[in-house]
Amino acid sequence: MSNFIFGNKMDKESFVISQLKNKFIGDDGAVVGKWVYSKDVFAEDTHFKKEWLTLSQIAKKAILVNISDAIAMNAKPKYALLGVVIPKNFSFEQIEELTHGFLKTTKQHDIKIIGGDTVSGDKLIICVTIVSSKRKYTLGRKGLEEGDLLAYTGELGGSLEDLNRLFRGEKISEKSRFIEPVLRKEFIKRATKYLKCGLDISDSLSKDLSRICALSNLSVEFLKDFTKEELCSGEEYEMLVAFEPKYKNKILQIAQKTNTPISIFAKAKNGLYESECKEHHF
Image (cartoon, rainbow, N blue to C red):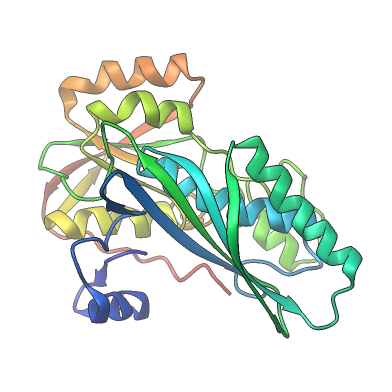
């Protein structure tokens, strides 16, 4: 869950958080003792349409986007709890395909499903809670300071491009990040001790950058030009990170050793940064 106000206007997610606010809420996960808890909802007609993805792909992505939050906190995912709204017209074969997708993906990431709940409904909705063990260094969203450099991993814009293709009724590659996000576990694991703050890019670079900036009342000076697609593409699940300039070479070395493409794109400065991107969920 995110904690952000657009200028003087509060978005609905932030309004909900403002009603529940406590010391645990505000990052990609909640740190409680030696554990980190994270949770996301993956909902039909908000995050996907069933005609776009197989049930195995839906199950896999639902798990991966939740693992992404744990990785963004530099935590090690251990257990998962599933809550699933199963459409009333689903056959046992469809349910089997979905559950096999959950099991295959969690097994690949050494995660054990330890429980959850199912109910019947009109649309497929998947809620996943990931329970992770806390590592020595935890990465949160707070801590940006004037002069810090900001970088993102991978390439941005592809998820929005593929979403638009799907809306037009076109096919997209099974390797598309919209179908299967690329997680940067090794990079974050090695780099966190040198990072000030960070989060995974789920709501677009621009929106998630505005969240980090708002927590420190700062803006940014962009060091490169962006297309609107690069700035506003959601569902990327690449990492947005900030660090002191003295660690620039160290971060680049870790990126190279972990085969992680990285772009240093901005420097923090005084001011207020507001995102102009529209909500990417439909």
